Image (cartoon, rainbow over all chains, first blue to last red; front, side):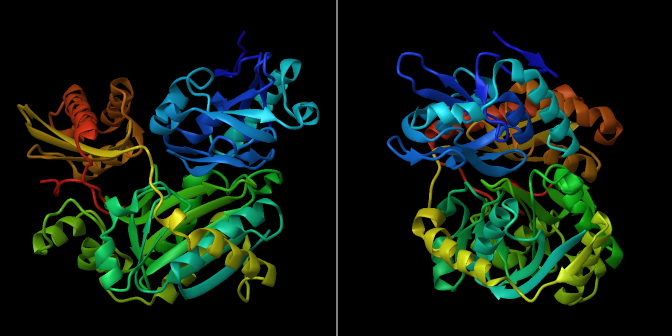
Length: 149
Length: 375
């Protein structure tokens, strides 16, 4: 199921970090979460040229860096939407960062995290009925700040 | 609204870069005041962009033999040399929350406005050129970059050429030139300029610094309060980050798994030969050089080259960008059709992709495009 808001594809079956535009999808079998960048976040960055990802086995805290990137508009960090341990990373995005722009929700996933505090931290993500209002306000904010046209 | 102004000189690369990085993080957390820092590095040092492979970009042995320090910026872009005649500009502001900074956050266009205003005040007709340059008559004068810290704080970085020893730059940077003679120096001088060259007069760096500070104050309608250096807490954080990051080989000599590659293509047309060279980072065009013997306005060619810098390489995206440039400047390309330009660029991209799998490509610097001068 997908939700088209202001022409940015924000799938309604995912959860999102409100500030850093990282998407989160829970694997129902393992409880691990797939993490990537949403389309609005990508629009603010432009085409990705370089990506690094932290190694599998590293512990990360919500709000900390799980990798770095250089895009057309800036360099920056990829921010963990939840705390936990990195259990997998998508090396295809490291060797071909354009994959993230081309397929942000499928082939362009970046890491899988085994969450350590999912119950509390998932409540801080936005999902479901909260998405349209959040997306609208974020589009407005990004436009005001010049990140997107 | 007030910003802090910090001016410092003769800094080491590790201190200079760690200070900018720390301020971006602290300003994002409201631990430090938004700050405009106008500073110079100890002559000379060579700085590569965030993800460049330093051994591709810089002649490391030459730097070691000549006491030229090397390091890696948190911001992207190409390799540069910095010293007493190049003004470092670092603006750090919050990236979210208080929207009183929203005007300043309007990316490069607004950041460059402070620099452009200051340069105009000196009589230098500088203009912002998307995405990352300030130019005078199509010659690059300032390179720009943005880094977003984990705290959300934004660092706008610029290097302003008050003066430049081009020969030294060509010795330090790993350029496509096989030798360094007057011809190569003239080629680079045709693509870049300096404040002193534009003014045809010597001007003190301090004077340039003063007008740049005025330019920012005017562009953002604020007061700059000249601070007596960094706070104690900031200096502690800077020292820590120098030791943990900017003084480590892990940071300076890190490599990327996205290889650089070069490709070139020539297309004959009735209006003349189009000769295109591109440097790619994986699937991204990092730099494009458009030469040949067709007649065109130099500024139109420079505009096209700038538009293709850090650009996706898919043919449809290349075609869209070239089409947009030709729409506004077609007459300045004197008979060259956009489709032919697209053909030349996409051929060069294809050859770079082939070369990527065969060999490591020649690198280039921030102020040096691949290939020779446009003729």
